[in-house]
Length: 372
Image 1 (tube, rainbow, N blue to C red):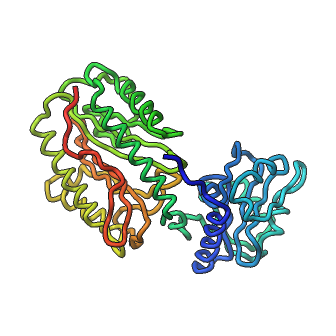
Image 2 (cartoon, rainbow, N blue to C red; image 1 turned 180 degrees about the horizontal axis):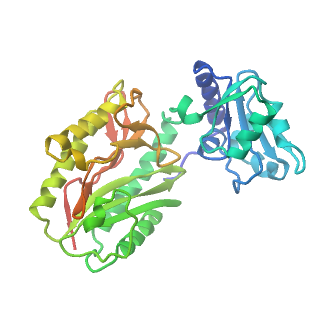
Image 3 (cartoon, rainbow, N blue to C red; image 1 turned 90 degrees about the vertical axis):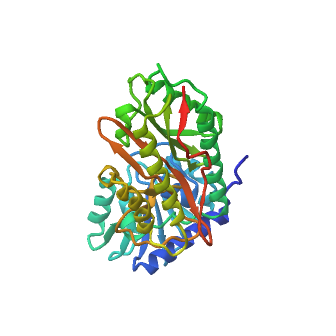
């Protein structure tokens, strides 16, 4: 498929929504620096994130305004969403913080991108000492959480491409090859199926599978190994992320038992998804199955994370997160059990919230698969 381009009106609607959300949160506005928030709001991604200040200012008292270095203005003007902003540029040698200060209230309270450079934030504070700033995730954690139909279509396409990658990797030989060899196969298949960017290809064989974020290494995969596969990246600018666990040759009884517990836990987590439910309830549902089976201490991470223009973003499925699920939210459900020195098992699907329940965007078989 080819993605339907986002339009000027799409970006304008997003900016208007953010301004309304900021006002409801008691903020005077939102300051967005280069990164995923800026891309989502304007379609503009600087060629390189440099020391030169780029800042999108969203407030109730002026039209959206994007401050950019003069030398980057031509590139900025090509982005679809920047047509919905006023553009202000500053020339090398001038003070960009003076230009930014002119766009802000001297006593304003703003949310600012999590990834803003400290040098920029400190300079803004020095220029306007009575302003206050909070991290975006602290004040507006659901900024990009609810996806529209176009975004969902991109996430569905990315999920289908990841599924096709998994189906093909099952036919690849594992035994006698290094983890890095299988990881390279995964990366190649993701690209073959349309990903423009591969972010991670976890291949955790045998005891390495007990490390949830193990990076594929030089370990040679052996017959009898349990192998955790966790891979994804970006397609049409939106993320994929799926995990399956396979066994090289006939699995032991222990591997079968643990895999079945994780499969049931993952199903329980997906079954808990519906509008109005707190994020923590998804975690509780999956975790209860693992705890009841006696492996609670071996489930050492949250059950899930949001996904969109980045592969990890709010909301998070974890105890203490009381944010309610809303149709259009997309996140992973990925419980796991990790037995140090032995093996690990994880099963992960991306799930979107519908009007009544949760719908998986990954649909490959979650049963334990045997590979060569």
